[in-house]
Length: 514
Image 1: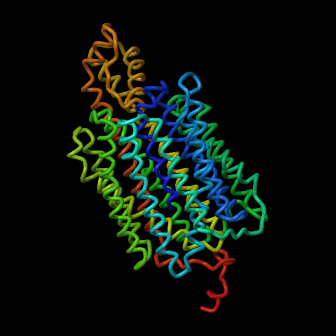
Image 2 (image 1 turned 90 degrees about the horizontal axis):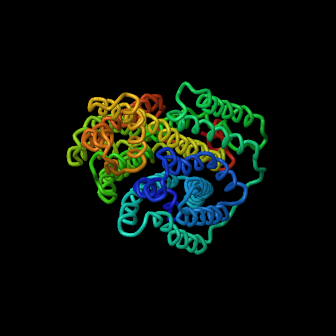
Image 3 (image 1 turned 45 degrees about the vertical axis):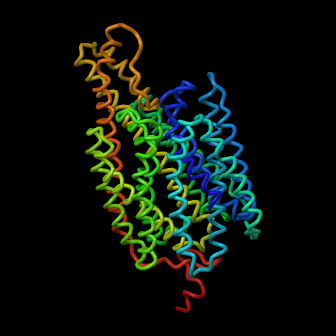
């Protein structure tokens, strides 16, 4: 859990530091989103590989390897040089960080599965998912403090002492490696990585290229086609990267679908709410971090409650309650964004966080409990790939939506102040890029009529950005609503972890006896 803390903190810590990174390195708005997205995309693309490697070579070795890859990439992210190659450098090593996390997380989960007996495994996994998810709360707080008191580069360097302690604890724990027989499905790993990369690239670039562009649809449709080929290929492989027979369990399938829709909102909310707080509310990075803390108050409390519901009644009730609370919370939060007051919004932020808290740990734990015998690596590979792919898609789609709405709103504002339509749209695009990635509200320099009109419209532009964010948060509410519809199909009951060697959908000895 100590090692995994780094991977969860890094999902949110960069969001708070984003304005300072953009300001110092001169990144574009889409470039900064890719700095955030590259980490999540690499997580999604390589999680299945990480789970399979933990099966083949033993979890201890893979935990150590993943930690080393992660911390070395973190140091290199913090050492990014200013200049023309800064954006490429940062995106590449953020992706390497994601690769390290993809190796580390499933191997760490294997340790939990191995050291707890079947009758205690559900509670242990609920604690693992709940606590590790709650650690994401440290990201905004730590990021805001480090950025304000030292340098944004420290948000990457802070992983070094954490990694050192994790490696020492791993050595002292004397974890036994129990490799499984089999081979690594390299073609499958390549197919899933390419499919996810292409599809998310299409979503991410839709605003720059346009939804009518052949390049956008080539990436989206091409990526989904590659993923379809991956599914077909896996069915004929003797030792697949992911054994798709786990989907014979209806509860496992529902858990996976619920996780997908919930994760469309969970990670993206940190990026969009922190930028909203700094642009529309004029908050400092530290204030933006405290704003996000409200979300985690609800998340932490609901995670504990959801774990107890899972132990006593199974996951269905927790999933239904969580998706309803989440949908209502995000919708009310979206409605209050234009009030431009943090104090008016905090109850709905807490409610949205509680909804996510009721969903994530119970759904993840139930999925593992339902199909653990199919090989822990395969099951974790599916659920965690889905979670992180959904987060990447959410960032891409909501980012496109925010940029489009901001540009349209600011264009209307400038045209109302006498700026010509073409010039207003051109300036609005620049304002959208600045707001989405910069977090600042400094008026443009110069004494011309356009610069003057833009400076005079700063207050209106803050409201324009808040109104654009409403579309994003209403979208998150819709995602939780779709998760609710999926949760209705959950068969209920408690998942019984399968014994080693037992396959999902196939009765083992104990079950045949019963």
